[in-house]
Image 1 (tube, rainbow, N blue to C red):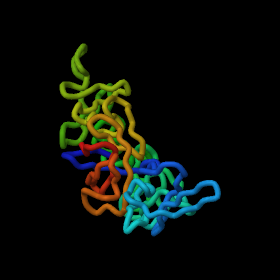
Image 2 (cartoon, rainbow, N blue to C red; image 1 turned 90 degrees about the vertical axis):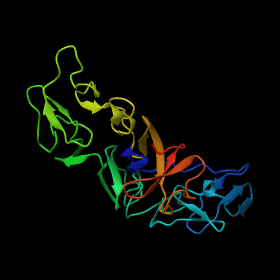
Image 3 (tube, rainbow, N blue to C red; image 1 turned 135 degrees about the vertical axis):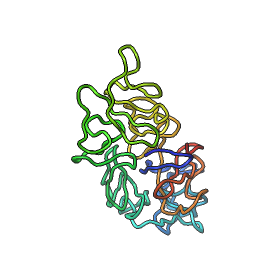
Image 4 (cartoon, one colour; image 1 turned 120 degrees about the horizontal axis):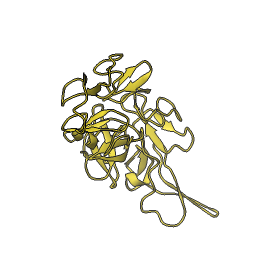
Length: 251
């Protein structure tokens, strides 16, 4: 996933949110239409939730109850994750609980698919802008030591390396140890090279200003700002919906 012009173009889900403002007895996660429940020695007390921090991932606190706007809650009993089988989903529970996508994939319509910046070639998600074996198109390999380079908005193409002693990729690019050429500006939002060559963000993370940030998806969010994003997360617009991204910036 990439962040472009203040928007995010990718997906995934964070680990269950910690309970907010709860002292003493532990809380169990609130399920659809339910509320937070405290438990203690010989005591079981149900109290209304006060904000999204009292509910599980993706849940919203509605009229004192933890509500899920999606059609999939995980685990099935005592759920703490609310997600959806349509549109952007939870990359750790894609289409069904426990179905996890690879780092190069995201969850969309209940299936693991290539991240928006990648293309499926022979069963693998690859970057046609940098992959010398699939440069600009699947199966279009570069030969004789050539490199695959793409400019901003331009498809990858094979070029001979620059003169000895110079950056073989040319100015404006970083030559990674793996042999690929990455546009310097892409290091700020490339989830496969986030902040540096080979620094891969997980399926539940996005690359924001060169750092991998956790995020979760809430089916309750239909616009930003969104009440289902707690105080530690920012609502960010993505190519397929809205994400709650850790921190205060979207990119």
